[in-house]
Structures are given as C-alpha cells and as structure tokens.
Image 1 (cartoon, rainbow, N blue to C red):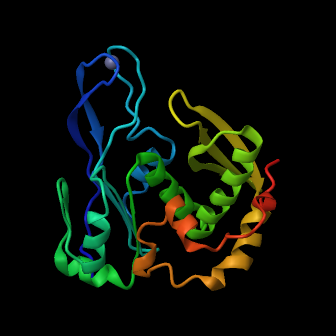
Image 2 (cartoon, rainbow, N blue to C red; image 1 turned 30 degrees about the horizontal axis):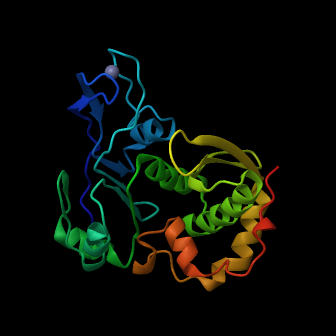
Length: 242
Ligand SMILES: [Zn+2]
C-alpha cells in the first residue's frame, strides 16, 4: 500500500523572467489526496504554480516538478519539465528517479496496474488533469474533444492551435481556452461547449479504449489523440462551439 504522506509546502528561490530579480516562492512538490484538498484548491484556482513577481508585478508560470496522488480515486499525475519520454518509461517499469521527486520503488510497483498514471510537461496540463479528476471527466475523452475542437477553430481562424486546455466546467458548459498561432504573440480564444457533447463522445469512443490504468495512456495529450486514429475521417465539425 502507498504510505500516507503529508502534502507540504516548500519555499524556493524563483527568477522573474521579466525583470530578472530573485524572490522566494512557496509551492508543494507532492500533493496527496486525501489530506491535500486545500492545496489541490490552490492548483485549481491558480494560486499555486503561477507566481507574481513582487518587484515588477509580472505573472508567470513556474516549471515545477510535482506529483499529485489521489489514493481514493487511484490516480497519479506527474508534472515535470524534463524533456522526452524518460518519466513515461520510468512509470512503465516502476522505477522513478527524477530531480526533486522521490518515489519508493515498492509503491510504484503497487500502483502500476491499479492507478491511473499520467505525465505532463506543463502546469496548465497538470491543472487540467486535476480539474478533470475533480469533475469526474475521463481525460482521454476530453483529449478527443479538444482534438476535434481544434479542427473547427483552425478552420474558422485560419491559423493553428498551439495548445488547448479545459479551463473550467460551469453548470452544463465546458469552457476551453485555445492558444492560437504559430509563434508568439499568441491569441487566446475561449470556447464553450455543452457538456452533452462530452457524453456523446464518451458513448461513441469509451468502449474503443482500454482501462485508463493501462500503460498506453501515461501520455494522454493531443499527440495521443492524433495517434489514436479514433477521429480519423470524422468531420471536424462534430464539436459545435457555442
Ligand atoms: Zn519581476
């Protein structure tokens, strides 16, 4: 069984990308649910990982190493700025060695087949995984929706979608933010989709997918959605933004 840990805040010097000054910033490298619900809120409402420089007021996002583990839902998310698929490979074989992250090998072994494991490389993607868990949405279905939605947006705006995230769920709406353009400055576009579309996608695709705990979903992102081939040949107008 995973050991019970406490989610603790640590303080680290952070460099402001705008003015170059250093300041102390507090964040949590390991969030464990149950127990870490207060810290989870900080991620969801963006008061953690998005520091504001006390000298010049610039807001930016840090590149954290953080693990999020929910022992009730059996989910384990890692955000790392380590490039490539090293962490994904480590999660598959159950041996984690990352700067700033310590995972007990027995624990990883235990979690392999039982926990939904995901690796992301950006705090927005990390926040999205936690938001989806919190709202009970399957992240694979959401990635398929985003992929389809990107097709619509690219057609309408005649430019490519650089990144797209679920921003919030409010009532019967899913609100996505698409970052559009091929290079900075990017344009931020907000798109609302009825939650019903999620259930349409779920009905259509869920039985084509394996268990969410399977190794093949460790990197569930837009690349995964494209490579799955599930949406190949479908009309990109399947998701209707309102
Ligand atoms: Zn600054």
